[in-house]
Each structure stands twice: as structure tokens, then as C-alpha cells.
Length: 393
Length: 237
Image (cartoon, rainbow over the protein chains, first blue to last red):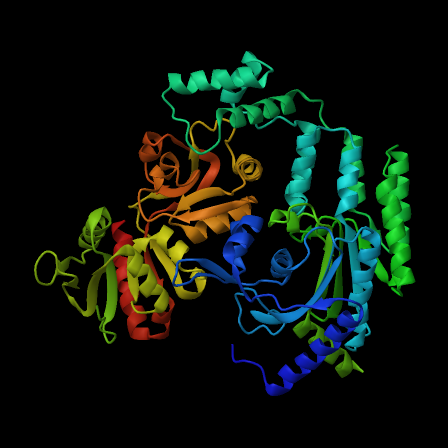
């Protein structure tokens, strides 16, 4: 990592200043969250996986710290310490370095340290209005930096959840599908299994306990307890007999439940394939839902309203692309998601990304759920895109 | 320990079965190694190959020295190579599998978890565990990197690693972790600790290997010595 030239640094600073000014003028408070963050929050939130892309280390006092991989969680922590956490609408913006592990330390577009400028909007009672505000400001910022040609991808995880909720199946199958949404291959395998034989992975031991003994959790639990003591198997590993019995019963129920209908699986597949300009996509989804005789009016109305609000704020909606499957792999998002991309000879480069994350603040300590939506701009890539575009003209 | 870089350096494990099996293999290959000084010495020679310096190091140190290019050829466990060298293919060639020191790195859960037989089950249980206990499922292991890569491949996300420096198999009973990733040759230790290997829980099938540092290929004299030793070993396996 040889560092940046004064010229590049000053170009980045100028760009960041222009964007921050736009955000501040739009009513966003400029804050400076800490660069060093306790690793625990990130690890508990996202699991061990974050170590593969975050710089985690132990300080001399033995505390595990990390260099912030983005500013979203640090901004949440700032809010919990300094902000009015009881439901007031709060708007923050920030500008500063973030750090991600990259195996190749020479790649200018995947730098290990880079600057993010972003904005976060907490507690807005009108979800779609806040979402339209965030995406419109982000597009304005990208344009203001001088970029003319870019693509906007949008998705809606809330709509996917609403679709699952409207299809008749056990709740645990919905959980499983939601959980695997981020891994397309596993998702499709799971879907196929729910159609073919939902209870395929029930072991012999479990069948004995669940099938032969009882349909009741209490009886399964007491039989399991008996079995363990008979074989002198200690109950270790932190899960109670009751927890194990609950899951045994669920797996046995999977086996007995009527499989997911092929038409429901086809509907889910068709939904995931929906892609195109938002209004066309909405039309296509309406058709799917009407032909399946489902009620998704709330989710659809929110989608349509968001589109209208984005348009009112000056977003060229027909230049956006809706992708039902977009949002996979973006961690804490719970609803509307978007990404701004610049086309390079090597493929699409993500310049900015954001969305709704309604569970994050309560997960890290807010006393009540706080609706939240935000976005971050990768400033090195934005500058590279602006320069590439200028070079082409 | 300083290693004479003007000579060809061959590293062997300094203790236990791995050392004995390695010494036997070299003897069988017609490359008998004699230790310098007393029996506990850490250097040796191969008769008839004066340009080779034999050093005895811990298997983990051998791995590290191979990565850094401080030694030319080393006998060590494949598990250690894959754990400690992130981009193995850029530093080291596994030139020969030696047919001893066979052991599997496996993921094992408490035997009482009768509802868990696959990594997919473990993934589901890890989510439930987090909801029920407000903390993450803990995996005790000394294989931090192998565990992360394997769990990511299998799609298990919501867990935390507890680094274990010994007696990993005792961690669940001691309440230090719920699950373990550890090395086992017969599975008996796991059984004795009431742990069960998951059906698709084999992380790596490891054995002792002869590993050759990449820099050796840039020096014809060194490459020739490495080829000679490896050819002889190959004939004796």
C-alpha cells in the first residue's frame, strides 16, 4: 500500500466535501463516528464470517477491536449514545475511512482502506417517503460529483417476505427460505426439497422418538431424557432437552406435512425472476399474484407509492431496474434495497448502495425497534468512474 | 535457530510418532538421517549428502518456515499447511503424500443433539441458538482458518470461534463451546467425550506430506537435490 498522491487525496476531499454539503443542506447532521469499534458487536451481529473481510485484532488490554468495515453500525452506536433514542426522527451524514480485507493490495477499485460518504435516516414514520428521499439524495450526490452514465438497481426484500407469508406453508419453511435467500443454489435446492420430500433428513433416532412415541413435545422431551440417561449420554452443549425436543417435533412434522405445491414453488421461482423497469416489474408481479389468487395488496401499494415518490423527487424511474432477487448477499437489509453501478470494461462497478434495515438498531441495543434507511457512497470508485467517463469523451 | 541458507535445508518434525515415521521413511528410502550431538539434538545429516542440512522443528514451525521460504523441503501435516498458509498454492507444492499421520479434521457436535446430523442442521440450530440464548453458538478449534472456510462453504454463518490450544474435545463438556472442529485419527477421543461427527462434517482428510517451497524451483542446484530426495522417498512409500 504505497499511499495516495496529494493530488488524488485533494480530489477525493473536494468530492467528499461537495457531497457532505448536499446532505447537510438536506437536513442531515454531520457526525464523526469512531474508526476503532468493538469487534463484539460486529461478530455477534454477523457471525464469524466478518473476520474474513474485516481487520479484527486484540489490543494490549485484551479487548477485541476492529477497524470499521463500514459506517452504518458505528453510526447506530453513535445514535444509541448521543441521540434521542425514543422515536424522534433523526438524520445523520458522515464522511470518513472504512477498512475491508482484500487479498490483493494493489487493486485500486478494491482498496483495503477507502472513504465512504453516507447518510442514515432513523425513525421516519413514513417508510416509502424516507426511502425515496435517501435514493434521490444519493443519485443527486453522484450526479453532483460529475457522473452522468450510471445504472440504478432496486430490490425489495419486504415484498419477498410478504409473498412467502401469503403462501400456505409451515412457518419454519418460510424461515428456511428466507435464511437461504442469499445463496441462490441452496435456495433452489431447499425449494425443490420442500416440494419433493420436505422431511427427508430425519434420522433414525429421531423417527423413533418423534414418530413412535408421540406428537407432543413434552412426551418427546421426557423420552429423550430417559434415552440419554439409559445410554449415559450427558446433556452438554448448552441446548436444553426441551429445545432439542422442539426441533425433533418440527422435523417430524416436516415429514408429515403435505409438501409445498408445485404451483407455489413455481410462483416463488417466477417472482425471483422478475426484472425490468419498476413499473413493468410491478405489472408483472401483479399478474403473477392475481393468477395465484393471493393478497399482496399492502406490499404492492407500498412499492407503487415508493415509485411515485421517487419520481416526484426527480429520479428517472424508467432508467432504474427492479430485480426481485436483488438484495441477496446484502447483510442487514430488511426491505427496500438499491445500488448504483458504473459500467466498466471489466463489468459493473458498485459505486453506492443502501436500503432499509429495521432490525439493526434494536439488535445492538435500542429499547424498541427503530425504522432505519441509509446509503453509503464508495468515493474512490465514484472518482474513478467520473475520471473514466471524462476520459471517454 | 539459524538455518544455513547456503546449504539445502530439510526440516523434519522434532518429536512424536510423526518424527519416528519420518525417520523410518528416510531410512527405508536409503537416506538414513543421523542426529548431530546427543539423541535430543535438533540438527542432523544424511549420509552421502553433505550439502543437505537436516533441522528438527515442530510441525507448525516447519509450516511457517516453508511459507516464509526459510527452508527448502519439509515434512509436516497437511492440516497445518492448509491452516497456516492462506494462499498455499503461491508458496508451497505438496510434492508427496507420505502415507502416515493420517487423520481427519472434522466438525463434531454433542451426541445428545439427536436432531443434528448435517451441517445444514447445524446452520438452523445456530440461528435458533442465537434467538434462544442471545449469544452465538461457539465452535472450539485450533483450526481458525479451515473452520471459517468450511463453514462458509456449507453456508453456516451465525457462530463464533473460541480458539482452543489443547484438549479441544473437552470444550463442550466444560461449557467453553457447543461444537468443535478438531483432528482425529480413529474417532475414539470424540466418542469418549460424547461427541458425534456430522455426516458431512469432514473438513479435511489430512496426512503427513513432503512440502517443497516454491523458491527451490528458482535455483537449479536446490531443485536437483529436492528432486533426488523426493524420488528416493517416492520409491519407499
